[in-house]
Image (cartoon, rainbow, N blue to C red; front, side):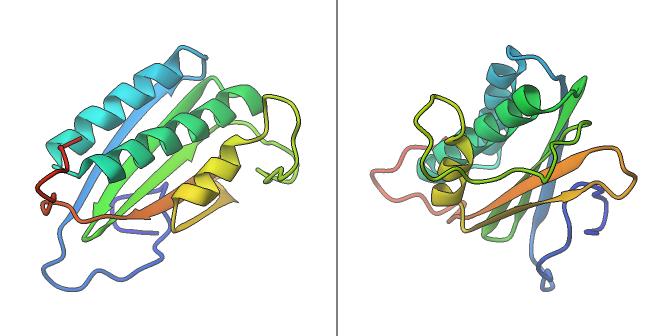
Amino acid sequence: MAPGSALIPRLMDLSPGTEALRYCFALPAQPESVAGARELTRARLDAWKLGSDACDAAVLIVSELVTNAVVHTASTRVVCELSHLGRRLRIAVQDQGHQPGGPRLRRSSDDEHGRGLLLVDAMSSAWGSHDAGDASGRIVWAELPHDAGRPSGTERPC
């Protein structure tokens, strides 16, 4: 596990001098919490000065992962962790429930549900899931590259 984080598995080494920032929040596993997760994410990424493209993608990914945790598990709360690691942003959402087999992509869903992970897959450079180490639920994570602190002349902050 990455130092200081039970949610995010260590997938990359940080070279000396790489800035690592983390922000974690927990919300009730209720549909109205999805909007709160978007607001908290946008506020933090704005404080970290991420560009609008990375911010918009991250807010959408958080929205989809929190929605999945609320809709598809019997959780009472959802924990989200944002991690700014050099030029990467990592998002991890932990629920308390278990969906048999974990989250799955549904490439040909005709109903209004089941497309969230397709969006996560399309917008992230990597994503995955695993059971929490203490059998307390599942963690779904996604990673985005970004150019923090280097917005172009036309790009607005988050």
